[in-house]
Image (tube, rainbow, N blue to C red; front, side, top):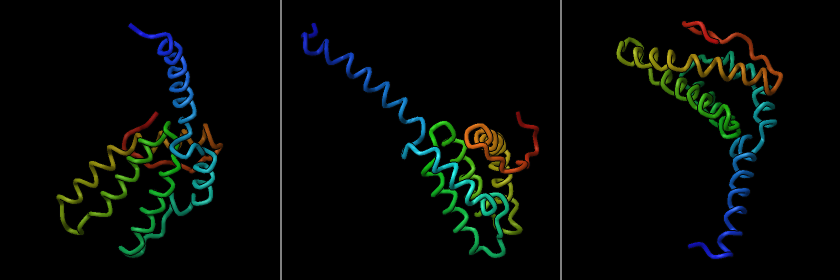
Length: 139
């Protein structure tokens, strides 16, 4: 049996939880605008990175991770999938078929995430990052 105090507290908790969920749609930092801004500011580095040596890979991964910290909840899993894709690709050993196969499989699994990120950016940031290369048609 609930006391009168508990009965009054329950609606407040429900409202509080609802507000928390509603306010969390922008991501952990609540700043979809910053996410969009960082994508726009780093668009060339993100979509056409200059990877001349193995040393160029980690800064690219770090950029994706830093921007991922700003990712709104609506697109965070897809952005994380892109990071995983690039992290996996960075582990390929030239001439090693097994590491290449893992990278190809991860890339295929990331195609839908890439297409979703592209569409989310168009819909929410008015930002077109250009075509997303996929093996299978998306959308």
